[in-house]
Image (cartoon, rainbow, N blue to C red; front, side):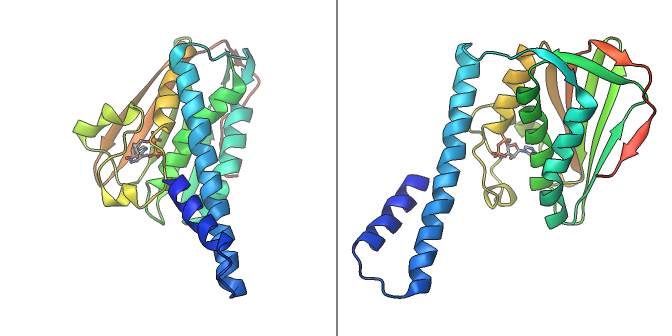
Length: 224
Ligand code: ADP
């Protein structure tokens, strides 16, 4: 766990036996990295438990979904570039508007796009699409990644569940992201589901109640 590492490296430093500048700096780097990891874990745990006990407050307002998705794609572009993954956002002619908590919905989308990038080998592709249908808006994130076996597809939405696969354990994660996604989407009156073929890729789809449609928009594919 992060705490074990922080303690071990801090103990070594406090003994004052290291005289090599480089090694000392590496120790501090490990402590800093592990502190960040611990911070993320604590934030995720607080977030998921708040959602579960029903004490999470939604700061509800009008959400401009196109703006939200653009910003999520922009924020994750660096991670995609680092793996040479093509990250493509497609928006419909009529951009649906939502009522919801835009910070929390951004966390939902960031988790899904972040996972798609994490679990897709270098050189792959991630598509973020958005369509309006029957008063609902449907956002899907499709990747060409490792995929998820049928028997894991329900379980990945459980807290702390990570698929038992070395391509997953090689990547840092808390197993809490999808639990947060599921609960947040439910609180918004929506749903999330996954379709996947192992070895070919996955599509995560979120459906949310739509508020209205912006008639003035034109269809576009955005490469950020
Ligand atoms: P984390 O990514 O921190 O492990 P999540 O709750 O976001 O936690 O995801 C749970 C598990 O679901 C992951 O550990 C991984 O096994 C699987 N998973 C999630 N998204 C994908 C994806 N796009 N492709 C393949 N596996 C995925």
